[in-house]
Length: 434
Ligand SMILES: Nc1ncnc2c1ncn2[C@@H]1O[C@H](COP(=O)(O)OP(=O)(O)OP(=O)(O)O)[C@@H](O)[C@H]1O
Ligand SMILES: [Mg+2]
Image 1 (cartoon, protein in one colour):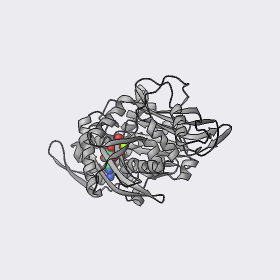
Image 2: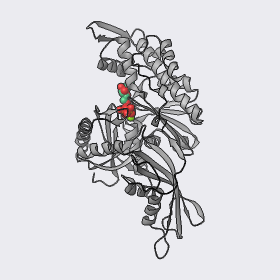
Image 3: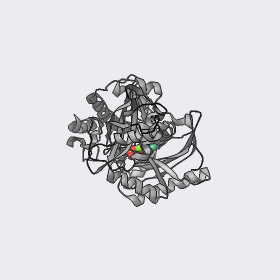
């Protein structure tokens, strides 16, 4: 993209690749084009087939370029999932200029020193997020450039990911004819779009219910304090319906997306979905029955999230919870959330941005995140990507570790077929999670 201040954000999801191009005009996000394509090469948010992923990225790019009328050059890409870790970091450098005035290069140097951390070979630092700087004795500085001193220190956070997974992302982007501008953590991206500054400050949980994953991100004092990913999402809702309706996956998906409701009580028993079973029989499924199946599975997913929130010490958030991701478009999902979480639950409403669907929350959030990121913080992007980590320095305590990195064995149920009654759903999961 040639236009100054315009960027492209790519979300390589399990069910769809999403691409948005936009700009920030006076603090307002202006979406210029959006596109999506079915993604076949991704499992639980991780690329497992580069060829198929390249194909999907190219399809989304073609759609967006058609709207834009110009080619896309570089893209920011979202990263998430089991392999991501966020760690506290600190760095220090001496100020080099003759007049001791802090320059961009000094900031880059101090951020670079903050990345020097002992981490296993298979991991790579993808970004550094400075929180505050210290110049000699003066602390709590947000931008030290132009100040005078001898010693510059920084504290912040490092985003670390698995090299193999990052490599597949980079390779897929390059093979699709694009350049990688930088990685953005999905949890940070959605926070910029789905929640207000006040909510992030007071404390809020954001739940992204995607296709094969559901990610919870907790914010307090404008800081990401906890994040976790569960291997469940809309795919499980669809699969449950295939068993209930004894039909093909695509028919169940259509029934879910067109007629699905998150609460049995919201479904109209008189409203019936016509479909053909796997044996070729014509049948009608009442909307309330579809709601019954979806409610049971969503209830289980929410209960798992609630358990994680309680374990992490964030059972109740001052500003409540916000739902986003494709599966959050099910009517009544906020009511179900309120019932389970016993706090305020709202669905992210993308309409105000001209984005049609909550599945674009990650990509739209990336736009805002990158475009509003301070210049001082952006220095991190230059040095972070694909950086080889030098093996010295003291490793800081892990602030946040995705709990799926070493998932508890009981959280990987293998049985696909859902039992027929709602009660049985509960007992099925209780067996594993209870
Ligand atoms: N109107 C709708 N009602 C119900 N579910 C929907 C609707 N629209 C999309 N979905 C579901 O949302 C899911 C896709 O959401 P999203 O694009 O956020 O996932 P993803 O990013 O591809 O997956 P993941 O985040 O797990 O990698 C699919 O399971 C899809 O069936
Ligand atoms: Mg997603």
